[in-house]
Length: 318
Image (cartoon, rainbow, N blue to C red; front, side, top):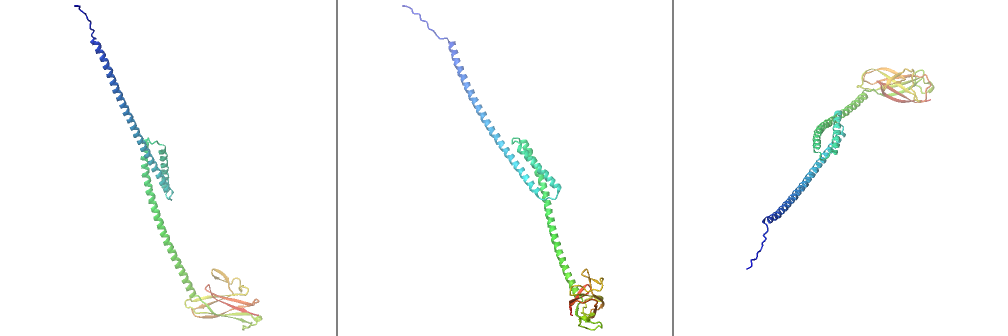
């Protein structure tokens, strides 16, 4: 038979292996890329979450510091108001008032600085807070001094009021005693004062005889009786009689015929010295007519020891 020759082509093993390796490399690269992308996404997500968390924390911290700043500002405002309240009080201490004014200005300055300080400036806010504590201590010290002075002043006012009340009581009692003493002195004076209890005027002619004829009157006789008074001081006394005409003028012989009555020098008409021993005594005074007598009602006043002891009207007719 005929022999047939066939040729069989077998793929080269090296080429197949190379192709397979290439595919595996691509797959591996793809897997690594995917893993890298996933990792990158995870890291990015984590970083984003962390950033958001930090932002939230920072926001909370800022809000907390802002709140603390507002509280600190409120405390400064309260201190300023308290200082104003004490400053308006009447404090009788110039040095303390000066110190209060100084601290009040310090509070205003710190408050103004706090307003312009950012809430994130934690260091300065902490310093301001520390200064506020110092101001508080100083203020408490001043308030204690003010309260102490206020209590002392109130005590002094109370004591002064009590002293004034006591003084007023003493003054009232003294006035009452003086009034009673004056009244008693007046009673004693009235009790010891002499009194003319009998009076009579007689018109006399040139022969010293009683007359009712106007043209014959040459002398006026005044008879009187001083009553008994054992409380009156005995001894020599001066009796003054003051004759007042119908026109109100005092009849007087000499311009120097005056005596003291109620701290004034007044004119008298006739005087007479007499001795008084507490018993009733009678006497007479005379007025020599050297002028034309007015007709009408006259008045005769008697004085002893600076006191008016009797007043009597009498009439002269034509």
